[in-house]
Length: 199
Image 1 (cartoon, helix red, strand yellow):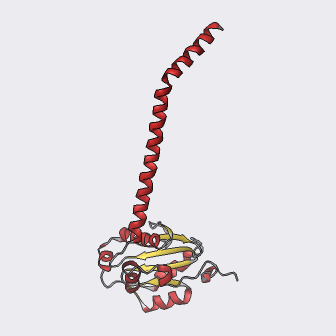
Image 2 (cartoon, rainbow, N blue to C red):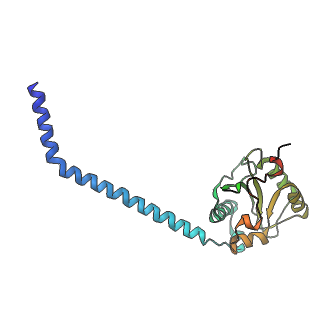
């Protein structure tokens, strides 16, 4: 018992002697954590500022590959206030970018990067309509291309609630800075896609 009391006393003496050093270590760790948070906040603010000024020209889009095009569309949605992420990959069920914004709801974007003069046909519209609601629970479905759409694709999309962004609209959105939801006059969440209506 005496040995135990002696050990406890020694431990307390050593702790008392080490207290200034321990306090210094705790202070240094606190400064490091605060510094990391400040740097992270500055980096986030810089990213937000960069995205707020984001403008992409048609020539820049044309020079991109498919993946870069999808990331660019995601960044443009983020610029416009959507919480967006790139999801495009094999088996993506006709969704390359998905975003959410209150009160507009959920948007699914299918990206179709084309070479010069490329046209997007009706089959893409069918795919997007078939998956946007059932697979992705979307309130809005949009197909975006740096090319153009066939007349049938535009007519079919307009009739069935699949919006389209061709080269001209892409320039107004990406380069001139008009938000996509304004450009396409997207309704709020209460207005559902045709496939979301209750029979």
